Every structure is written in C-alpha cells, then in structure tokens.
Length: 488
Image (cartoon, rainbow, N blue to C red; front, side, top):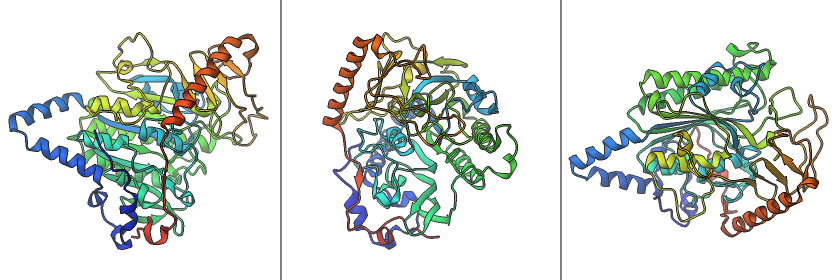
C-alpha cells in the first residue's frame, strides 16, 4: 500500500513562486508518486520471465476505468431512469449494456461527494461536509490516500478532466494527489476561475458551464484515452454540467423539449457517446469499466432538474438530494441490462477499483466503502455489502426504513414544485411503500425508530473516534505568491 508522510504541506509552501509556475504535473512528482515509481522500478528489475507473467496477469485482470461524474443531475434526468421528456440515447445504451444501480448514494452537495469518491469514506470522516472555495483555504488533506494514488501505485496512468473542487490552492492540486494529468478548472482569488493544464493557467474563464468548454474537455479526454490505450488507465471525467448557469453549446441549443436544461442534458449525453465511441475505436471498450453517476440531486426552485419519484433535491438529505442515477458498464463481466437495488454509494468505488486493479485498500484508517465486484459479477451474497446507509447525525436508512435524526428543511427556493415542507426530527419513512417520503409512520413503528436511533448513535460515536482532518493552509501562506497563480 501507499504510505504517506505525516504531512506534505510545509514542503509545498516552502517552494518559491517560480517553482510553481508552469510545468507538467509529472515534473513535480510528490513523495507518494515517487513511492509508486519505486514499486514499478522493482517490477522492472524482475527477471524477464517473471515480469512477463505479471504483465500478462494484469492485462487480463485489470480493466481501464472511466468515471463520468455529472454536477447536479437529478435521479429522473435520464431516459433509463424514467424520464419521458429528456432524450439521453447514449446513456440509455450504457444502461442497456451494463448494470443500473437504483439505490446509489452520495452527499447532498459537490465537494463532499468528491471527497467521498477520492477517499472511500463518508466526507464527515475525511474532514469536511461543506463546499470548498478558494477563500476557505482548505482542501483534501495530504495524508489522505486517494483513489487515484492507489490506482497509480498499481501501474495505472491517471487523469482528471473538468472539475476538481477539493481545494483551489497549490497544496491541494490534483497532480499532488495521484493524478498524472489535469485539464480543468481552478479558481484563484485574484485572477478568478481559469482553465488549467496540469499546473499551468491556460486562460481565464467566466463560466465553466459554458458549452464552449465541452468540446475542449472532451478532446482532452479522448487524447488521454488514445495515448493510454495500452493501459491500464484511470480517467476521471468530472463534468461541470448541468450545474447553473445553463449555457449549452450552439449545436445543442433548442434541441430539447425540456428547454435550456434539456439542451444541457443532451450535451452531456453527447459527451458520453463520444467517449464510448473513442474506447471502441481504440479497441478497448470491452476491457473498460465505465461508471456514470451524478454528484448530488438537482437544484430545485428553477425550471431544471428532476429528482424522479424522490423528495426534494440538492442541499437536503431527503432522497432527492442524496440518491442519484448510477450505471456501470463492463462487457463480458456485467450482465447487460441488469439492475442492482441494494444500498450502494460513491464510497464504494475506491475499494471496487482497488480489487480490480490488484491494489490493497488502506488498512491504517477506516474505509466506509465496500467493493461492488460481487454485484458486478452477479455473485450471490448471503448478506449485502451494506445493511444501512447513514448521513452522520442526519439520516439513517436500513432496508426499507429511513429515520431522520434531525429536522430536514427543503433545499433551494420554491418554484415549479410549489412550497416544499420541512420534516421533523424523528420522522420515519417506509421507502418501499413511500419513496417520496410523504408519510411519517414513526408512531406506528416505535421499535424501528428506537433501533435506528441506536444504530445512528453507534455510527456517530465510531466516526468521531476515527475522523480525520481536512487539509488547512497555514495563515502565513498567500495565494498571490504561493498558490496556484500559474500564468500562461
């Protein structure tokens, strides 16, 4: 496994400003990546016969991995998840050829979900449940061992395209957290949002959701696939869409019956189709695990996303905020057109990818996720990988039952959905009979309420004992001189 130093932040802060300007991400290899390189050098030193055996086993066992994560897309915003007004033919094809996850959980907002993805843990355990902005001077802690680092240590080439959102300062840059390449958006306090290639600022950006950037992000992803086709590789395509403001590219304007939001969904669908076609052209689609999911539910109060049968949306722990569409395609392994309705979540991707890559899941810390591989391979388990899902201190779901341990308010403003009421702490919902969380049945099931309260308390106690800090900048660090002011 990767062993990380107690902290790397002082070393990054001690660098001169000129050391941080320009350059490819590979040129500034941090210690964890050096450790991975040393491992690869050891493999290179093996006898040729042994090395060939190892390479042959990896070629058969380790798929390429693509994760396409959208931003604020609702559960009901795909044809294969029930929409009759949005056209998503490429994503629907992905679903027909793969497995549909109906009970896939994330956090209710952007940064926490991405933190959970990178660490395999509830964001609460990894130190932050808030959206991370440049002004906050925080980001993913250097002690965290990320999904990208684990795959990199297993011989994967790694790239992130699009939206990082786990810290805007140099210390938190994705090239210091396991990614060989980065092409996407970061925000500088003085220069504003910019498009970056690795650590070099390419240009300033007014809106990262502007459709003009869709083709550029897609081209970068395609180039990475082509140059990495001998694999294995990990591509994290973190789309900034369909977050507001909605600014679809010219070719997609007016193409949807759902207005401008629908146009943006068409744009997302096009990108998925183009990536799948590129994988097929390179002859690697069948050995590529392709994951499609959203980072949280839709923004409500505007004429946009749809949470399907679920209550509310982004910024809430109602099902509409934390339950999102997820599809995984892996031909010849996953049964085409299959469905999984067990409790799963974005925390499960890290251990899943580790198992597929032959990398060890970290054992020096609590990892909340569990491998999805048995589900993907259709293996019958005596017990599901999760018997419950929690948002610590807020909600707990076990089987059909969901208990609110605090009062939940609606997310966003009231709009076409009308007035959306709050729900009192102690409310119990039967998600099987009432997926929209409309009827509190706590009075009828006091034993279930008591049991779920005890389970929540035990989970929170364990989390408090094992939670880790978010990364924080020393007060002496100035982004102007020591941050990500990487000019063209």
